[in-house]
Length: 254
Image (cartoon, rainbow, N blue to C red; front, side, top):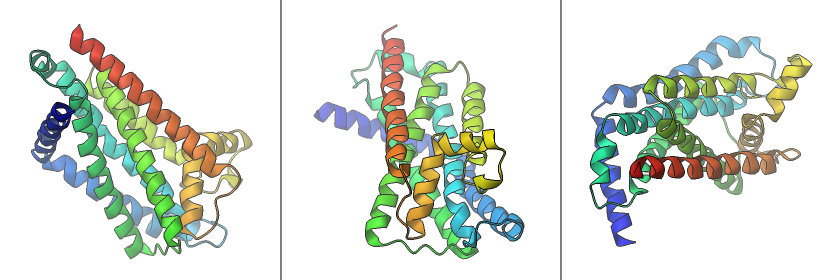
């Protein structure tokens, strides 16, 4: 256990230093949420009917989904580059815990995602976001966001260990981030065509967006949104974690 903790610390600092050596990626992960929030609130806010709700309060969950998936792209690319540039061959000859490599990447990605979330919420508040959640609701919001971040991060890691190139990783995760636009995150689903409305409300991001929106506005979650959020993103976390570890260990011993 001691070796696992020490190896994870080493890989964490390695991944952190690699991230800090590419400041453009870090800066963009902070600037993009701010730009998206300001653009949607100030450009589209006045022309969208969200049932009388403060538009900033309506749009925040959708923006969070989009920027957190985008933030994970650099993690997937970093893992993929390590897998395909010979670094993994050096790890084969070292006495390190096999899971430390992936865990180090995930811990750095998690901290970066928390920072991204904080910036997005800060800019949202400047733009007019006024949550009225209770302490209990805020704790539940934090738990759901943490679950979403971990699931998305392990999804990025899975893409990193399985895809052939960084371009493949970036393309797939970018498409995943665009799914936020096909959810209740960016616009009310009532005005969508029926087939699109059904998809938007039942894809994995739909219940998560609905749950975060209800909780930040001080409401109880509706229907099975909370349960479906836990099922969807808990399931995605378990599956992507298991596949990431299995594929990584297979390549490590190949």
